[in-house]
Structures are given as structure tokens and as C-alpha cells.
Length: 402
View 1 (cartoon, rainbow, N blue to C red):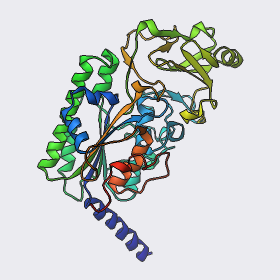
View 2: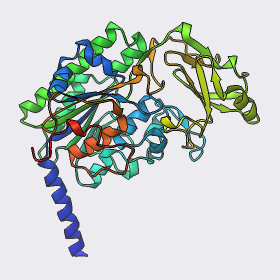
View 3: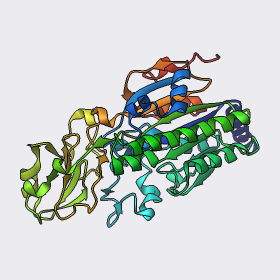
């Protein structure tokens, strides 16, 4: 038994020392940063990173919402397999609970997250320390494991202070310093919803976040710490307006259903005894709207087999929104997301730079689950089986040993 314990300790120490010999790996998410924002001339830091490294547009996973795509990025599993099938969902195995971003008790309940294994969990199991600065899922003990360092989400925390916290973690003694770090910014998404993707406010938010990334780069350089930095977004943003609103009661009688999500798509649960009525009224194509039963989505969405997917899912044409008259919000967004991932407006940014990357590589558009094997490789973490592939991003990598 003593020999086994010594062997385990030796393996753990080897993994730790190997990790410390690598550059830091920092995965940054800018929520709602559409791929074409990078070409607006308002993000000098990211533009320089792209020139000195790699850039691309990414296809989000379906549905193009925040929690499903952040979990797809960090697990390499599409939402139908990682279990986070929407920002708003129900699970027959967790009766009486609605998962919503605003439901803190659900957000920290590992049962919602355990269908996937985020990269920080795999890292911690291998003896590689990780830290998460506001990444969806990091507040739950997924598979019973938390990052070595993490903080509960606080939207009021500025971009600068988020970076300063990451730099404080980088200041820890080498044996305590995390080798894999995630960092999350939400300002661009907020401005996109409020003012629309073409607004001056979105450009200003992009500039603020870009400056924060520059602050991180400068801070790491001042500490003589090499880092591979990968910047992604979970989805893009499309303009919406009141003259492109749809109401589900124009197709199905009120009082026959309840809704879970509305806006860029609608998820519905027929009320008991009304299943046939709702199904007949909705499933199929309508003006600017298509509805599917669970399990009967187009194959390209890779979606609809998980029991958490709502019985009926209605997707508008990009730029249109769908509401129930009983649940229309009392405020008007000028931008939103959740539309078909193939729509250009939903494309998400990808920029990567550091010692592992060649300079000036523009990659073809790839699926966001392909980020997972890339980041795992950079951090020296053995990736779990996933839906992602290293092949689309391999042209951006220097050969090993260089």
C-alpha cells in the first residue's frame, strides 16, 4: 500500500512540475463579441494579438445562448451532450426546479452540470491548478471538484478589477500559481442587448474590454510570465425591433401551453391534455418561424435528444423574435442572440496568441467545441472525449518543440 501511495504522489508531483514548466494558459470569454467586431478598429490589443497569432470566426453551438455555449467551450461537448441545453430549462430527474441564470440555487447545483466535465475539473484531477474568473459552471462542484481558485459571479466587478484578480493569482508562489485560468467579461453583451450590435455603446464596450486584455498582457509581461492567451465569445448578436415581433397565440390558443424561454426562440411545454392541440398547431413552418418536436431537429443542430430539451422548440428567422402575449417583457431589446448558429450575426470571435502560435494565421470558420482540445493541449491537460477536433485550429500552432 505504501508503494502505491508513493507512486501516486510521484505521478502527482510530475504532473505539477510539468505544468509549471509550461507557459500559463488563459482562456478569455467576451460575452456577445460578434466576430466582425474585430474589424471595427476599436480593439487595438486584440487586433495586435491577431496579427501576431491566429484569428477566426467561430460557429456557436445550438442554441446560441450564453450558458450552453460557455459549457460547450469548456467541455468540448455540444449542449445536447453537456446537459446545459438552454439558459432556461427543466429536467424530469430534478422535479419542481427550473434552471434559470437568475436562480442561484440551481446555478450552483452540480446536478445540472455533471453531464459534462469542464477543463478545470480535468486539470485539478491531474494535479494542475486552475482558476476561474466568472465562467458559467465554475460556482458548482462539478463531479465534486472545484477550481483551486474561483469567485462567485459579480456583474458589478469592473473589467480592470477582474484582470487585477487574475494578476494577483499570477503573483502567488509558483507551487500555488494556477497554470490554467479562465476570465469572463459581460459588458459587450449587455450593450448589444440594450443598444444593438451596430451601436456606439457596443464599440465603446469592446474598447473597454480590449484595454483590460491589454492590461493583462502588460501585467504578465512585467512579471516575466509567458502565456498563451485564447480569446473567444459564446455567440454574436443580431439587431431586433418591434416591427419584427411574432406572437405564439397567432398559431396556438392561449391556455394550452406554458413557456420556458422567449425572444430569439421559444420553448413550450403543452399543458396536460393539450399535447395534441399544441403539436398540431405549431410543429412545422410558419411565416418567419419554424417549430420542432423534441427529437426531431435538423441534424446539423446536433440537438434535441437530451430530456432537458423542451417538448416544442420554435425558432424565428434571424432578426425576428417570438413572445407570448401573456409574457412579453416590458422593455425592448435592440439586440439579441439564440438564432441559427449558421447566421453570420451569430458568429463569435476567436483570437489566440502566445509562444504556441504562428503569426498572422487566419483560420477558416470552425465550431466552438474545437476550442476545447486546443486549450487542453496548451495547458498540458489530457482532454476527455468530446465533440471537438484539433484539426481546424492545428494550422495556427507551431510544431512542438519550437
